[in-house]
Image (cartoon, rainbow, N blue to C red; front, side, top):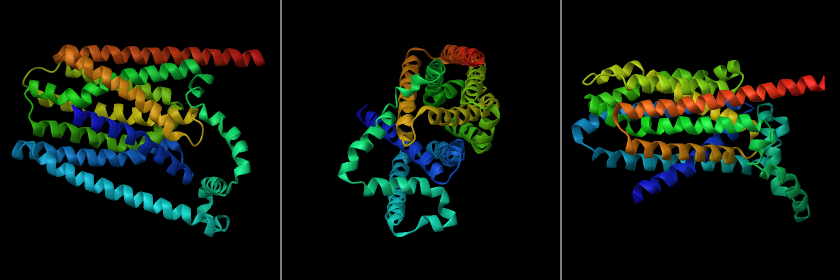
Length: 339
């Protein structure tokens, strides 16, 4: 339990920071934040490769193989973090030495570069005025309810409900597959099928978001895909585990749309420069949902568990639809009143 707690602390701290770094990089490159999905695609690639390997490896060598792969992953992560931090340090160190305004390819970097110069060259007399300018930005959490508060809160609740369900699928679904008669290799195959459909979903997620015009509808699609998937799980007969492959692609829809929608949602209400704080708040909501979901998974099991989860996610989706409908009506009434 102690090691599990340390793992949870580490992932909880890293995930929002990595998401914030990704959004900041997209901003530096003058790209749409919705393109977060294209970056997340590479995570799906490594996830799929690892699970295809782990299934047969555990069948052959047992769980001891995890000690070797975990050590290799730790070393690679440290190297990656060091290279990334070093490259950013060198980049910002050269800002004061290079005239970026005369470099065409650096125009997209100018806004953040100017912010860096201002921050590093400010005098003590300017600290008071800077603190006054930063004060509105510090109201990260209050901004959630200032504009479209009902819609934002219903969105957070729907995301919470979705992650109540997703926590069971991501952590306990292999136990259900074993109950149906599946092997470790079969479990790895289900992940491979999921990832195959995550590739195009993450790649085209920005275009889907632009067509839907709102992260609300994207999250709704993720909820619908989840409900269909777990209901089919609950209907699969005993000793027919491979039937799960039919609905495994829907997990790609759920995870791809939910993550892309959450990034776009946070970008709408979090003050500029506080991307990591916004992602941290959403990460907290996801963590609470996962905690509740795993508690439910500890009390229920088998087919009834997935039917209950389908109901929970459906309730969250309905709440989001109501919040979106009421906010849209209020906006229309407000515009008519101004006319």
